[in-house]
Length: 182
Image (tube, rainbow, N blue to C red; front, side, top):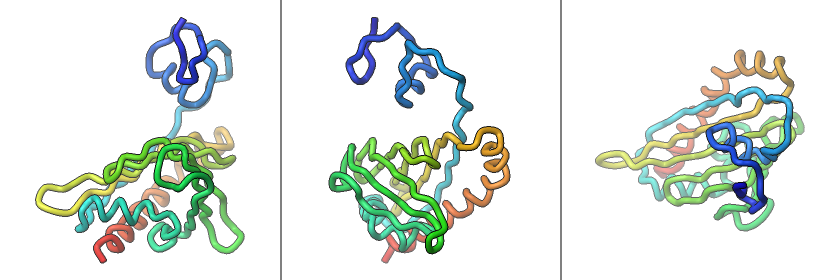
């Protein structure tokens, strides 16, 4: 028997599926209906500011509305500066939109902040990486791996919305780069 991350004994399993199942909180000893593979989205933008400055602005959660398109974020648990802290981000216009709740799973300044999306609509993982560039500045990478809601309709919707989502993420990163350079 091997032990999972919570110290519970379970049947021996190895490989990517076992790791993914454990990450998603599934008990490897139980059978369940297969879940569709998550969708992935990654965009990157160069910034003139050094990684330390970009990371500081990126993780100033109340300032997200200054660079993240149509989004306001706040800390809901902890101090927002370490693994285990909770965040909530509302994306929308006025009352129309959705709430994205998250838990910080990795805090490695000035390089990475990663989250687990825990909401009803947005589920999966996300990460911001701030990489130093040769010479000066940095490259900001935004990565998402999402479990889509609404079954086949969600997958079809994603196929149609993915280009717009990538464009909005890229626009947000360009705004973050400009804000960090001030």
